[in-house]
Image (cartoon, rainbow, N blue to C red; front, side, top):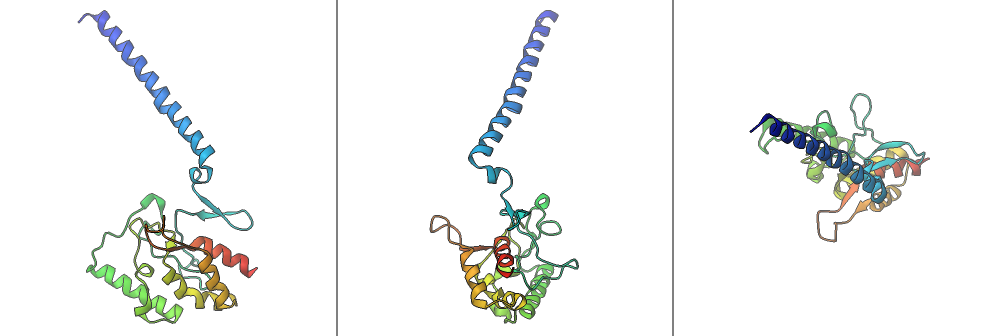
Length: 202
């Protein structure tokens, strides 16, 4: 192959690469971003959740802890399920613990969580649902089971000076049913429930 032919082929390859970069790397990205902003703007921007004052307080897709500076659970808030993602609910380190059910560290952690919940909520260990003491597969789950939410009602009501029936009604209002009526399990969005609690206590 002559030098002239090689240079012609190289020029074609370079132009093709440039065109593909512009069309696929820039154009496609711009189109998809634009469609997302028009069709599903909330989801495209992170499914952000705002409080009554309009302040961003989290995402509907990522759980968070409701603890004080020392990591102690705040009694006036519903607590999320544990997280094994980084230091807790770290979107950059999403994962489960990868510990087997007989792993001594996991067994110890579950026992400690059960004891803490039993003491805080005044319930027997046998009444504590599994999601209260185990992390989800992603470590980012923003939901808890209705059973775990109901277990916390008395504590939250007492801490806020509210009628337990009022708090229980808020739990019901923030409980989502199964998708399409049969996929998954009913769940409670902890962040949205706690925001509603703050609004009810003002």
